[in-house]
Amino acid sequence: MSKICTRCLLKDLSKEKYEAIIVNGLSSLPKEDLTSDSESAGRLSICKDCEKLNQGTCLACGCFVELRAALKAGRCPYNKWQISDC
Ligand code: SF4
Image (cartoon, rainbow, N blue to C red; front, side):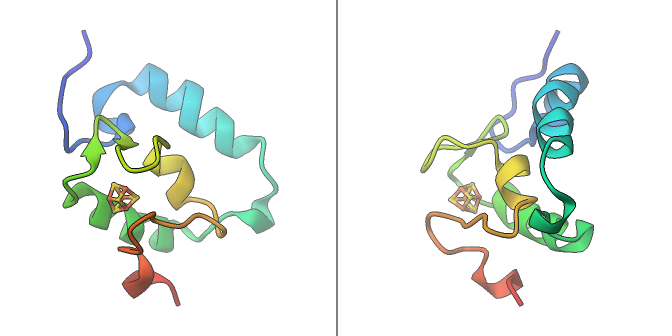
């Protein structure tokens, strides 16, 4: 049974869904389009403190934050990631 947690990422809620949606989704993208692991982790730490995070998705845009945070072109709709964008 999956946990319900509004401030959790998908990887914290369901290993199966994380593999199917996030890992498979990212594996289909060119590596040059992806952020470093540290950049993605920095963005996700901001999401985990955000009131818009709901079970791995962003209520502001509907995306899976783990996908968006891993993309160089990914942006937070409220520009909360700007402090970690270098
Ligand atoms: S993408 Fe931005 S608005 Fe959405 S959960 Fe993350 S920090 Fe919050």
